[in-house]
Length: 605
Image (cartoon, rainbow, N blue to C red; front, side, top):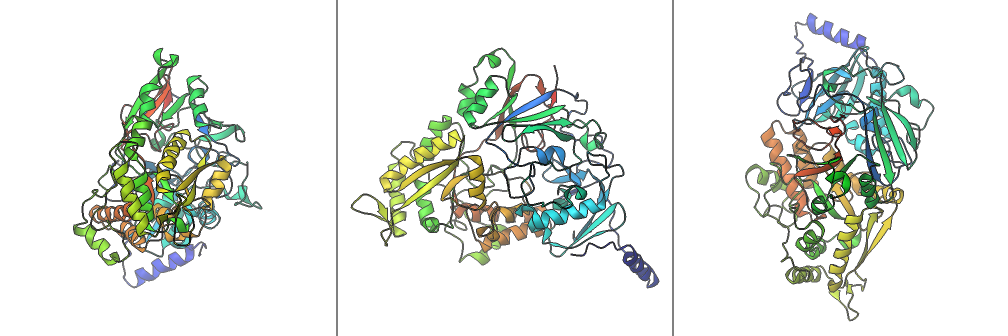
C-alpha cells in the first residue's frame, strides 16, 4: 500500500495539466452521500428528522445482557467484547441516518468527495475533532485505523481493505483512498470505519484481547466495569461533537449501563424487579401474557411497539455444511420438512408470528416465494443454472405442515428425501448411510437462550421417528464465541439482520472465504459462485433497479440453498421500559434498530 503524503506529486500533476491545456474535472466535496441518488437532508440541516432536537439531557438507562464479556476491544476476533464500546465511545468519519435506506452525513469528516464512478474517496476532517483525552483526530489516525483494522482487525474489515489500491494524506486535514475494483459502496463503507487513536497502540499487540478501552472520540467514555458483570458509560461533558447538527437530539443520557446475567430468564426477572430499565421482548405470546406485574399495572413500566420497514433477515437453525452429514441439499431439505413450524410457532408464540420466507422477505428486495425467476433476475441467474439448487429459478417455498404434532405428510416427504440421499433405517431403528454410519448430530446453544432451547427440544423429538439421534449441547458464552468463530458445531442458532441497502457485508456473510477463514459470518460454510456474482452485481449496480434485481437474485440463491431452518419474524419491535424513558414521536424507517435506542431516547421525570 502507498501511504506516503503526495503534496508535491499532486502539485506537479496539476501544473502539467494546466501547461498542456487539459482541464481537471474535480468532484465537489459534499456534506453527505447516498448509495443511490442524493441525501434527503440539505447541507444546512439542523438535526435528523427522527430525533427530538430539544430532548433533555440527564438520567440513565440500564440494559440487561445474557452472557459475559472479557474484553473491551470489539474490533478483533479474540475475546468476548462488552456491549456498547464501538457505538458509544468510538466515532466514524460519517454518520448514518436510519431514516433513509443508506445515507451518510459528515461526522468526524466535514465533507466527502468522490467521482461519478466512485473510483476514489476523499474525507476532510473537521477542525476541532478530538479524542476523549483531548488530543486531535488526525489524518494519521485515519490512515492507521483503516490499515490496522484491515490487516489485524476482525475479518469483517478485510474485504474493503483489499479493494484499496492506495491511501494517502492530501493535506493536513484530508485523506484520499483510491480503489482497485468497481464497488460503488466503498466510499460509504470507509465512511463508517471506526477511527482509533494510533498513539494508544504504540508497542502493543492490537490483536490481543484486553480490558483496556480504546480511546475514542465518541459521546461516551467507559466510567467503570466489572468484567462479566457490568459496564457503565458516562456522557463526556467535553465531547467535541455535541454541537454538530447530526448529533443534536442524540446521546442524551448521562449514563448508559449494561448489566450481565447468566440466563435470559434472569434478565427479565431483573427488569421486573427494577434493576434494569428497558427490556426488548422477542416473543409475541409473552408480550401478551407476561406483562401483568405491578410496575406495569401501576403505569411505572410502559409497553411500546415500534414498527419498521426493514427486511425480515434470517433466524433459525443453521446447517454447518462443512460437516459431511449436511453437505447434501436433500438432507437439509428433509430436516426443513421435519421442523414442524406451524406446531412450534403455536407452542412458543401462540401462532402470532409469520414465518421467515426468505432472507430479504418483508421488503421489496425479497423474492416472491414459490414464483419462478423472471426478467432481469432470471438473466442474472442464468449463467449459473448448472450449479443452482432446485427452486432457485423455478421457484422455492418452505414446506407447510398441518399444524398437528404428528406432521405425517412432511415426515413422509422427509423420509423420501433421505432415501434419495442414501440414508435408510436399519433394524435397530437408526438412520444410517451406505457405510453404516448413524445419522447423529449436535445442536450447540449458548447458555441463557431459553426460548431457542425449547424450540430445539421440540425439533429433537420430531427427528426421532426418522431414526435421527440429535442432542442439544449448551455451552457458556465464551465457549460459544470460540466454537462459532472456528465453525466447531454441527447445527446452531443463527441470526443475521439485513438492511434495505445490503452491500459489502454480504460477502462476509456468504462469501467462499468463510469456508475456511475463521471469524466470518458464513457459519453455514456456503461456497457459491452464483451468490458471489450476485453480490458483485449489487456492488457495481449503476442504479436502484439493477441493485434490486441483483438482491432478489441473491435472495433466491440463499433461500433455495437450504442453509437455515427458518423461524419467524416480527414487523414490530416490542420494548417495555420505565415511564421516564422517552423516544421521539417520529419513528425512523428502520424502526427499533441501530441508531434508535439509546441514541435518540432521553430521560424525563
